[in-house]
Length: 104
Length: 423
Image (cartoon, rainbow over all chains, first blue to last red; front, side, top):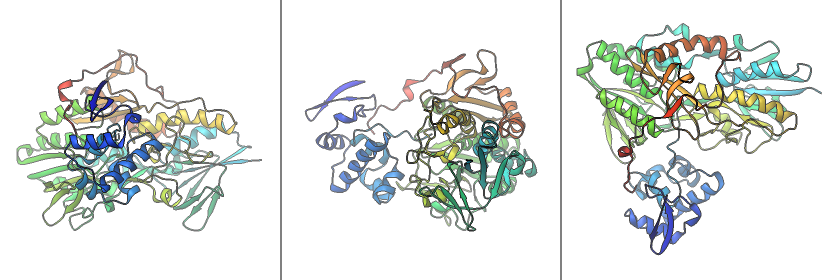
């Protein structure tokens, strides 16, 4: 586990760049992380990221795409538009949460 | 006063539970009822081999009631919903079954209806599943006629029951094509929503290498949006297309619909439980076990088996008002048929990656972990007898429930396979 700094925030990350301490996350940092992967945050992006944070606080696990779609009512297709190519991974990265398990 | 235990589902987990608990709970104090929709118990691992003509269909089913012991009532009927406020189960035909304690063991099922186009005009013509008896049998017919083109093996989304089965199917199909001198006329493609061949990194590397050796093309990170029946291709949410001549798909897996109707499930109708005790997170007198629960481990018979051992001891403590002392570690243990009469065996839990070594006896085996051997294949074939005669009847099998590290060592993990770039 290493420490890094972005937009004036110091935080812990793993070797893939995911935050390892969810509590170190702020929305300001979330926006900076999104910029790192070429995403500029809109209200629709924030709705998803806030829901992910909320769900993680309740369950201790990073929600899957299907779960986010189910809870928010946003079609899976829209999640692919907001976070292109690898939405599950990108959403978790921006939200400062562990990479989803890919289940088992 | 008599207490009443009701178990929903007389599959692998439910059948083992009623057998074990009937021996532990005094008959004068406890009534036990098990509910299922029908009286046919399938040997599900056999479905994998059915398309290749390994089994006769009649070898793969038995009546459920043969495995329900004396002193346990078997009720046949479709479950409409559970009323947790009234502690009763409503059946579709209007009957109700009251409980003091409820165990949900209704498993998970393939749901082709959840993907647009899967049940289209090509269903069971060039689009098949092999997780149902009918699907596996229909696929056997299609394979017998298949002599060239693109054979695509596809997983819709995780989690699925027996997550290694699609890989096994691919290995077996590859060997089968070679045996029939068709391998060079067929392009084999494995399509997965995962970033690699399997969910666990170490096993994923090894299984990925095995696919590569067999010249199977892997299309990873592919989340299917629909199946185009006219053009015979899979279409993903990110607009990639995979054409097929013969598609063998694993549809989305979901828990029973009554779980949703009862307000007991998550987005895939799995019951949220404590992952160490199987107690519902919402109700003190409801447990869920086996594939029906939202445990973060494989949905597999081995998990059900290891879970039941921990559950039975815990249940006896729980109904006695004591704290549950058993803690399940997510132990799973799967044979992986790799073709040519060989198989691998993998062993893992919530926290430990599949290890190499021997099983079940440290250093002696006879089964080799994480490598292809003849003994593993024979072990898999012998398992059918063990399943019907020992496991379901709740007789002791000398395997520890929780995972042991003796005689095992971490497999070498090639760090170069790990992606380091940002998502």
